Image (cartoon, rainbow, N blue to C red):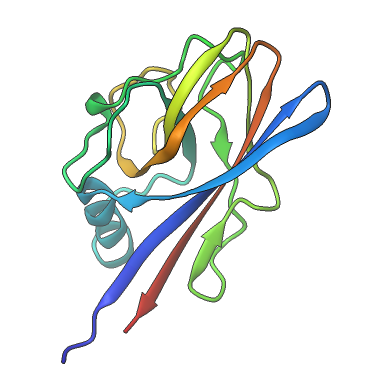
Length: 162
């Protein structure tokens, strides 16, 4: 049997209302084809590398697949206060993993919204349809947020050889 690389990650969410954590959940993701090609090109080719990545949330009941593109996702861009997608501030790779757990991305909502999933992308423009979609995840169940809720998002990407 030949060796294979496994690449995948997990989004972890913490929903805060009035200063209290009211819910936490996690959601496994798929690293989409554009993300896989981007990772390979960034590491092993002369591709242009984006040094900053961003977290987004989507509101359509869509299950990401290998062929998913950013245009397949309806972003929750009008319902949170931040002027751009929140930065995914990772601390460098260690033990075949990279994460923003020391500095979760944060969304402060200005209106109620129903969320279905999250994604990692190379473009910070809210609602933008350019940039490289790296990973996407549909929640196990739709999640509702209210105005003034804060959603903190941690994303960890792992790679292993089998």
